[in-house]
Image 1: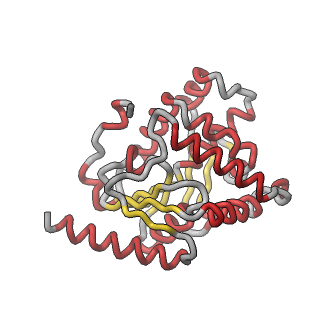
Image 2: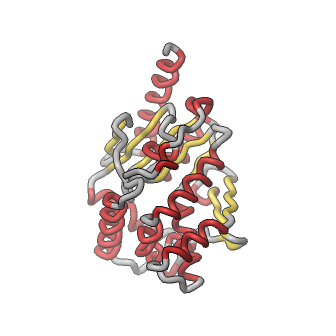
Image 3: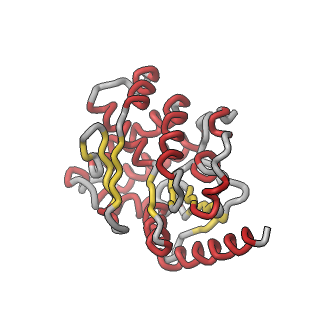
Length: 247
């Protein structure tokens, strides 16, 4: 059952200024979110980076992932600093409690544990509120796993990206290889195992699971270039704005 806080309405004033992009690992969410944001001169937010940052901090502090009370307390007191300098892959930076963790949060160790943090209801309540505060002025493309369903269900356009398992594994492997040098030897089967495990955990958790919002536009990115997907989203955004003005 979805907690009551997740059902709170987001201001209707934001409706035309928010595009949400949800989907499983490797579907292309981050790449597409950046490019759509650039087209619209919007900002973009990768909400998964917030859960990853918390996971990294828990690992640094040797906090057990079974100790939900300590992790919730950490979420309550954590300070995120997000810097968006442009629309390239390196232009989104995130600091947590003064530490730049942009690259650290892409490690396989964080990948293995992030769903354990993300499944904690108290953590989700806190981070959903923080995400809503970040986007409250509008002008955002927001990507994650519960954005259209929970964080901003009133967004003017909700996208659900997916791709074949083979395509998603390939993309995740490439993403790891662009990360810290210690990960350049990660094998394909390891990436596939961790990706499938995380998707299963996120899809079956009790609170705000990874789902396809019923009023979202589903786009299968398999075999499509980023430019093709962006064009499809831009066309859908134009239709949504036109329909909104005539409602």
